[in-house]
Image (cartoon, rainbow, N blue to C red; front, side, top):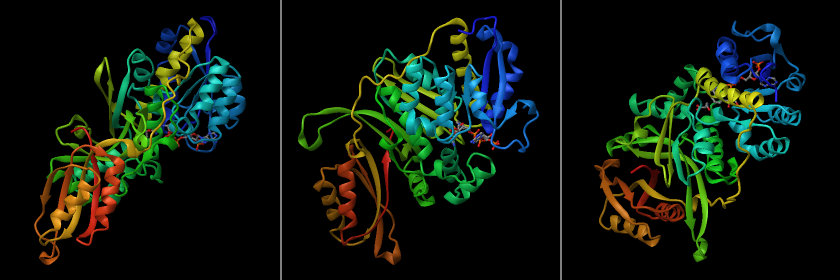
Length: 440
Ligand code: NDP
Ligand code: HSE
């Protein structure tokens, strides 16, 4: 324990969008933070890649270093906001081995190799906190990991990527094509120069893995997450959604499922998925605009909880980082320790095929007698029940038409088989889109 007579030494690894704001809050709020912790927080250094990069005036140049290892070795609390897998992982493991508490915003690292960090922190008896890794400023990790530890979470569903929410929102509200909306997101600093991690769903998948691991007391890696990004979403999909009372959102969903693989005895497990989905335009998630995030957590005793706020950005994310810094510093000064990894349930992670939901399928078909019957037969063959069918005015000079088919709840595997069958029918010119329907 550091004790109230000695400052808690804090090292910050990274001084970019988030790191700069962490330094700002540590500096500007030092008196309040000291009072809350019970001892001053002393910023002992800030590790960067390039000392020549111009920095915000709040960053004291004398604190900058490129020797992150030496910095880690003289800290009680190490804040990792550099991102990427290496050297972030090696530096965090070094910090933990040296007895420092660690705070990280690095969802990519946690989603890929969280267990290595948890195991090291558990073995060393030090804190590992990561509130900022999921949904930026929104307190979500702590509610799931601590506040709901006495409950049984059944489902976590929400928007956890601000960039893609901004892009889809612009496609919906301003009628932009995907590429135009991504360019706008880049101009505003939401999307990076290479937007792959956001638009292909990698960022959301890492966050989904972190949330699922906490919610279900089970190790879930990013590789266990079914992932579809937003690159296949077209302006026509957005328009078709609007016409039927829906908006398209990129959702992360982690849920308990009971599946009976191949007729065997039911097995409890989890399915974790990230994909674009249709959400009714009256649902609270439909009202989440711009780069905001919102997540619903459903628990047996608590019922449904909604968390909403800024999921990205330097200052909002720094707020979550500082909350963790205060917590782990308090533990140093006042005693105590945060939770260790909870993975006792060890539930199997089922493939997406075992998820059940509703679907909206758009098909271009020949406009002649008997076509609807063949389409209906394809659904029936896989036990997928149709809820509604809507036919558009004729296209292609009258020889074809677009059908919009909405199903009742069905297994994802059955729906995939249905789509495959539909695509093979002579009367089907093309499957234009397949979207899951959530929140209805
Ligand atoms: P930036 O790219 O803006 O900043 C990264 C910083 O880390 C830079 O200062 C860079 O140094 C430094 N850095 C990178 N590699 C090294 C290295 N090998 N050695 C020393 N320093 C290094 O990233 P962000 O601030 O946007 O993100 C940081 C972390 O926070 C990531 O894990 C990200 O996923 C997470 N996060 C980010 C959010 C956001 O809105 N930006 C929201 C939530 C989480 P230099 O300046 O010299 O290049
Ligand atoms: N790229 C992420 C987003 C940053 O757009 O939500 C926050 O994790």
